[in-house]
Length: 391
Ligand code: FAD
Image 1: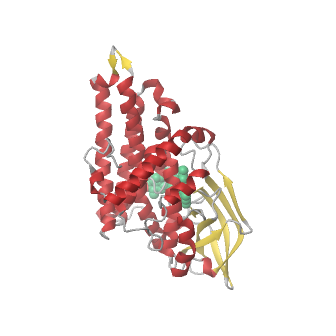
Image 2: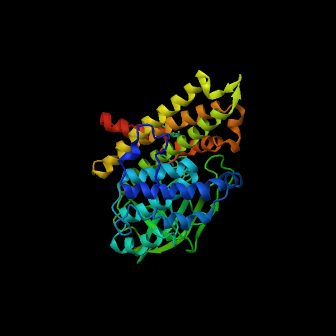
Image 3: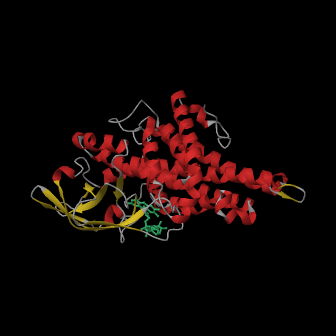
């Protein structure tokens, strides 16, 4: 049965349908039983627990949003709560789901034609095919709308891809990677479904990450990688279509940021209730309560914002600047919150064992990926002023 999170102070979970609450309860149960006990160990070893893929697919987490695979009508608010629930336990697992479900399947759903959607989405919903999303490059991060160096050249019925990609999540084990490249024909950004067994495609794990250590990121090189025209996303004709996919996933990253903050907050509430100093639990000291209250304020404000941004998607009114503001606000508040929670634990706050340090480290990557705070600020700034400060 479903119980509201104590960190959901204003009861936003009451907005969910009964069936959605049941799925969340099942997900929470699975995460607590099977995932929470693993994550500190996998985080330390910087490895991904591939055994979670099938159970997450069985919970229909990859199938929910897409017309081809949707098990029942469900709201963006519900899918946001799924991202929150995942990140509350581990933000890397939330990122894995975000890449498979949001970025890779999202690219095929938004940019693919009917044949492509029918071919790939059911297999990906079942986790029989794992996807990755290759946009960022060694020389192009924030400026990927203009700065991509990877080139796609038409050759008869095929395209030949050359270039390199960096930071690509899930790409150490993905079966397909969506590669975004500039067409040598018209200079527009196009997307390609690239099976990772294609000759000339190489993915190498990025080592030594100190944030989101569980999710696997890769450098990719593309050396005369040949794919047929039928693997080009038929409805992705310019970077605007890529940006549509990013808008959808950006809003879910904002939800994951709230979940990551909640993970730290819950650990801080527990610890401060148990740790005794000056003869009483530190939670009875006013300044410690202040840390907890400010954290809950951040969480509650961010939750209101992400709920609304998802309601805008559900009613067809969400714009790029809506998702951008939610992402930059929720990740800034998350970064403050995990710091305050760390502080509430004193020295133990920096140890993985006490449940805050991993959320604190993971906050840094969430803060910067899917559009840095600066880039999301400039997207909102353009909407307010009508002036683009970044082209
Ligand atoms: P840069 O673009 O070099 O920016 C560095 C700094 O300069 C930032 O603070 C930025 O805001 C600032 N800056 C840049 N331009 C401006 C400007 N005009 N005005 C003001 N400030 C500016 N990419 C993918 O394609 N697929 C993935 O699956 C993926 N997963 C990722 C997972 C992780 C863990 C990480 C860390 C990254 C991932 N990325 C992925 C890449 C991510 O999206 C980029 O890191 C991000 O877009 C920022 O690009 P950059 O790191 O090259 O930073």
